[in-house]
Image 1 (cartoon, rainbow, N blue to C red):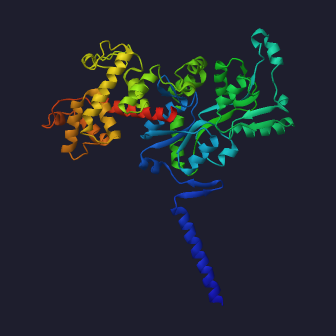
Image 2 (cartoon, rainbow, N blue to C red):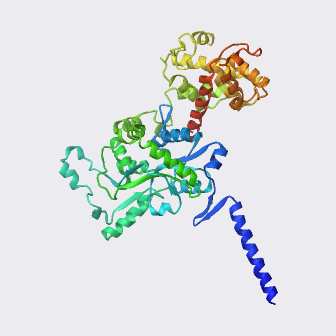
Image 3 (cartoon, one colour):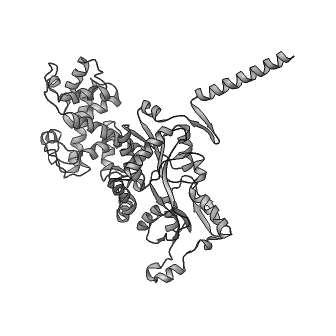
Length: 479
């Protein structure tokens, strides 16, 4: 009997050990809120890119006059260079979904204006703080506030947290404002009617609703509230309802090496004037913010990239390309300026050389309509030219873009070099682009298979990458 009992214990112990071993081999670690993906910097480097989650708004990440911009966007570009990794940006409107996707491994970093608090520390690990701000009440001034004295305006506003008792305040779902207002209820000894807004509504959406009289109050971070006050001067954001709080980014608790590495980078960045130039650009330059918001080319509000969107859409449909891809090419060429002229003599919105413009029907290449028509005819010609060489549509686009920049002769040379040196002549990245770069070296531009001589291919390789990268931003943010 004793032996049988010991045998049962032995079996149970072995089973527990096996389960424990399975736990670590599974690649995930359990957490109070579910399972957290066990992905750290080594796995991210092996994957070959850093995936960052952020919000689409007028300060973190947006498109203005065709250019991706934003505080988080600019910092992520610099972080990517520091890590020597390309950064893929994923947009998420819900803060709770940001945390969930991070912990599931769908992103590696939440690069957003996140307040650090104890509740969130249970879910994620925060980086070294990027800045410090307070939470403020956003309320509306009286309708005739411009004709009132300052003391009269103040008399009509809430100027003390004590006066929040019984008031209805709409706050962003999943935000730190909810817990702050609940703590404030204890502090003032009274109830506040806290309403969690729809998770799709951003902080800026709620501020706009206050400004337009749809709701009376919301809470926002002071740096964001003051920006919006420049656009909606009928707002008051002077009442602070919290102590100074840290604003930081977040990673998974299992990403300890990534966290340490980002912290080293943040501390270095915060010692540079460059960091404060970027911060001031998006959070201190209130007039620039208001100007962006009023622009017809602030894509977040209008969905427009340029004044030529309708023509680009029409001609892109005829070409069979996504109009956002061509818009990215045109931004790269001229930033939509019909009077642009390059050092090489290319002119107009499509930056056509005079002979090319004339050949494809543009008598006046500075005329944007003529330039667009001729540019699309040239793109169509290049697309047809490359069909016999590159049957795959997606791959062919890269060859067309490269040819638009430097001409097809040098690209054909690079293909022949790729074939000679056992690379894939039908694939651009890592293959043909590599040999286009090598065409600046004598060994390669004097090779018998090369028919067009020396080529400084660095600009073209960069051109293709930048057009496609901007296109990805357009795809994410423009329907």
